[in-house]
Image 1 (cartoon, rainbow, N blue to C red):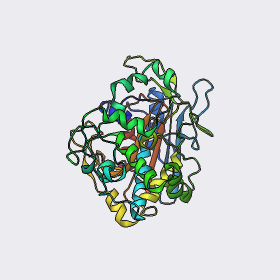
Image 2: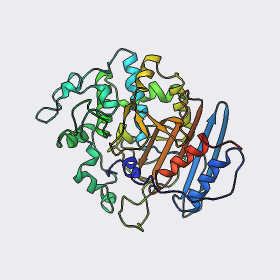
Image 3: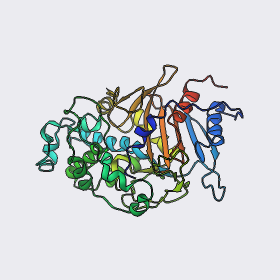
Length: 382
């Protein structure tokens, strides 16, 4: 729940390779083979993928949604999307910029005066743009050692229903000094996206979830997507979310972590969605159907993530990232990890060719997702 962002942890596992396997499937056999062997080698209980290429839609599944009943994974399942939430949050902010309610050059002091009083931070020098592109220098509250302890191992069961307000999360971060000067470099911090949503609520006088519905969810008819707030349940069909609770044991016990209050992640990583909805959202976003051209250009303006400990081979924009594949092709989108749930949603910059995939276990290496992307975007189609 409070352990360091799943993608940061996963980045250390990039060198883990998947063994070769057979078993082709019609449509996108290379992708299906990756799904099949991920399950066969016990990297995850189950895995799903949906590919949209123009008007063609293909879906593949492997493994189970529930290890006790043997229920198979299927495409309309809802799951926690972790940091892919940030793309939705950034879209809301940029839409408000387009509507004249905000500027990316506005500072924290302009919208949240007094919040940083008595801290080592200079809120008059930190802009909304720096929040969204992760260059603000703000400490990541989810790296706080005391908070991490509450979300690791058996402590997680004692605190899985705890509620945190955005203000509480920010105050945890502000106990720590800045990691760098504003604008100096990329440093991934969930605190940035909590503050961005607080600004949205301040300027609109509405809950962030309502703005999210107005700007993204209702226009795109994303029926399996929502920000649950303090609700610990996943409504509708969903897989069990299996987690090691960040155990360092080489043979860890796996637990059912499906039900939990994700107010600790909120607009930085607390949303629920489906592979279909993620593809529809990113297709619309990159296809220019959610933001005006000016704001979309801002979103696609990236900074280097080199030497930050984040996902190698990437550049970060405003709530989205670009990832270069081994074949040299770049794909765009976002990804997320939380307890028992890892998702990846990437594709071409024009939004026409998208791949969204999900595993319902949190111990697979990040290389698994690189393999899926490479299979789709680099391999010759059969």
